[in-house]
Image (cartoon, rainbow, N blue to C red; front, side):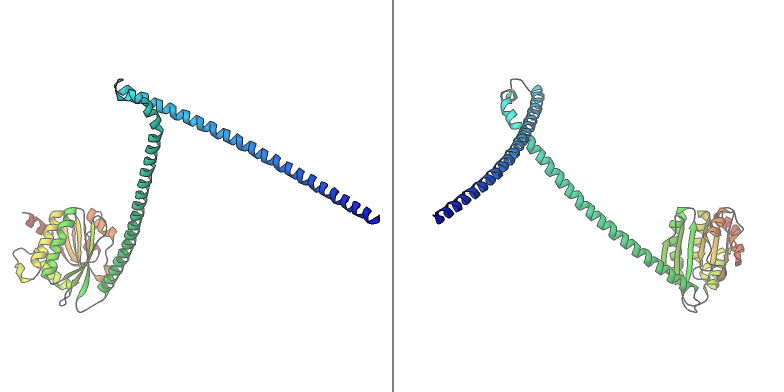
Length: 319
């Protein structure tokens, strides 16, 4: 009898526990179902919104297609093919519009890719040019510095002469280099380097051969070149120097430096002299003042010796 009671109590406990668990699971299922129903409702709302947007888009596309067709039909014969194929055009228009838009997108993408390739190549070339230009400038500074040092060093053999041409007229800058090259060839000198230093200035370096000092030989050449009736063949280079002097006389205000020899052509006259080494180089301000005629005679102000007044020679050469 006791065992029967124990079994009944045990079965009743199991039944109660099962009922409690079942109620909990039913409550969880109902909550999950409510959540799913809420999500479904939101999805339905979103779907209705999307469908409404699609209907509006289709209506707008149809309206646009109708307008396009009216314009096309207005330009064509009412009895022609356009009128009979209107319904077909309406159904075909959206596809054609999509195709044209896709084609425009492809064209724009291709053009953009081409522009990017061009820009990459352009910037790469510009960067390369800038680097090369910087290297060339560094090389030019090194060459000029080396030549200036060589020119300042005393030497009994070949030496470097610092030369320069400052002229107002471009024609002088064009003609003089050729005449100076003929002069260099005549005296066995060699042009080492030439550079442009502004719109009116050309600087160059000449390697003068061994032998008499440049001032001695240039002074002899100058004397023969400006002395009436002299035999120019008596001194090699005198005829070429005379051609240089004629070009300066005809070309207008200018200053020519050939190592120690300085030739100044102003609006009022022309002179030449030999400047001491310790007064070189000549500053740009001094040259500008000499050309403008706002300063005393440049060779005299620099303490030059063997000064030649070339006014009379210029007048006789122009006659």
